Length: 228
Ligand code: GLN
Figure (cartoon, rainbow, N blue to C red):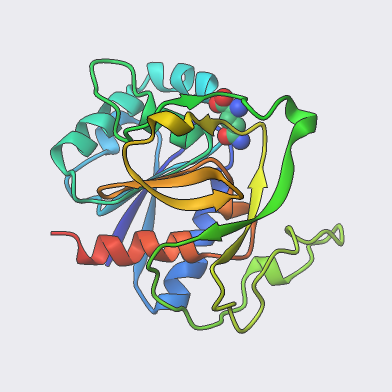
């Protein structure tokens, strides 16, 4: 059983829960998602972590009363081989931890660097990351809800594309400072690097949890089950 810690500070949290559930079914892996609200929940039993997107300043503030971020950073320092996925604001928190920590992702990052909320966009990305293939399972991304809304109609339905493309959803996204990237680029939008891997930490400036493509969540589970 893998235990996935999900930082419930603010932002797109529940979508990650659903994405992990789908990825675990695709891989046939038993998973428990722990909704982290207090620092004391961050313990040695966690196999991996997710820092969702949202608003990083609000997240830092939300963390103050229960010291969640401090506990997460301490956990990351103690278990450097356990994987962490940070999306959008989560990527900011990895690259700019503040407190007394060195960056967990070695790159500069600029907040809101694509512009304002209305400058948010979707675009096809190139991804190069080794991810186990998952079997097709029906998830909420395949269904409409009671309002006849459907989650973003983003790939894949079965079968998953073997191509290295990924549908990127950028919401008031940050940008990596391209000349300061000192880790491995794994996703790009044309010339621009939008995803990086630093050891076991993966930072994306977009939101894979808002799509029906769970590759990055499968990567997290796979890496967690192989971490030492
Ligand atoms: N603009 C947000 C921030 O600065 C990040 C946006 C997001 O996570 N979608 O924290």
